[in-house]
Length: 159
Ligand code: FES
Image (cartoon, rainbow, N blue to C red):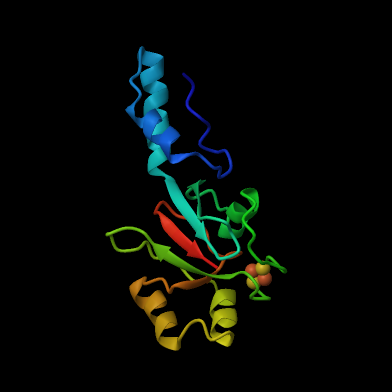
């Protein structure tokens, strides 16, 4: 058994297939090694669930955390009908709401200066939320998909 590449792009993996893979036992040392490698990768992966009235149903994909791909790149790779134009944090067309699906405190994801400007101008973020993000690592709900980098926590993305 060869562990799937952790560097591959975010991809759709049915939940049932992932559960079955986790239950699978390894038959020899190389399988176990591959399994450990895979389990290590799972710790760095995040479930990203896209939800929108424009989609027939919600779509959950796995994204590799820390590979510097933006949420917009994950959406494009999975044919999620997300609006975008500039892809550079300037037009604001990729605004979306991100909710962390965990009991733990959300990982502080720094707002880019472009996000602060565009979201403030669009009325999606307050001065207090910007201050909380900067001083308390509390991420605001509204983000720009082209600026947001997926981390190792499961998120719900609404647009
Ligand atoms: S695509 Fe323009 S701000 Fe994200």
